[in-house]
Image (cartoon, rainbow, N blue to C red; front, top):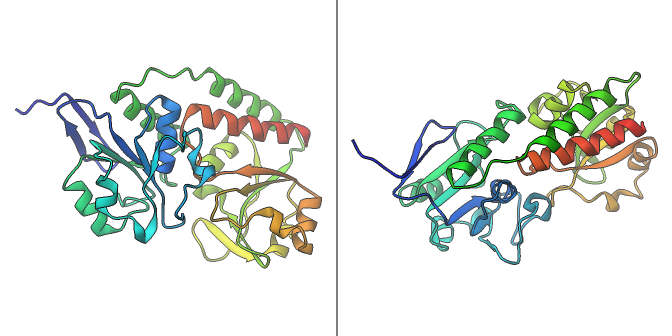
Length: 287
């Protein structure tokens, strides 16, 4: 039987192997930011079809972008670009079906023929805890130390305590799409939002309509939901809130709610999740 010094079974059920633990990791930017939090620094990262020629700072987390190559995103990204830093491992994410998010099918195929690839599922089929644990498993396999999760435990406990107070504020998660439209998140489709609900946070359902993850609607629809707290997408593909200040519907929404930054592609680490829970707990406590 063949023996290898390193092996890891990913969320597709496929096993990546190498003679020695990989040290030159290329990763999707969210995965790279997660590994950075866990003590494994990638040599390069790449974006998704929503990203551009520069890395999205919201997705980058604590990555030192001046020291790490950004290989591009979308149609400009091919297997040769991904292989240019001479990686011995590529870490990608999937939102279902094992498809490598941000990569075309042919690019993914050529990549997997030449380098070990690990794909971790981050979509709605997984719990936030499961996603976090899988990244921690991968990081440990690459030599990262055990993580201290005490800050996460404290943040979860605090959030549960403040959310138990009644009546609690109502929370709406959204992604600005422009002056006329907004994408309203369906809480059940997002692991971090489901986790908030399981801790007692009162999340607003946007209502019936097309879209598995989002309901796209006029801003007036969002304002009519009368949230007390708005979690607003801050990724670079979302329309910046500053550009909406002159819109009456946004002013009506913002005037009655506390607005928090929300990154739907935040690092999947205990450090990142603790910061998110603490921020939401602050807002819930302040009402």
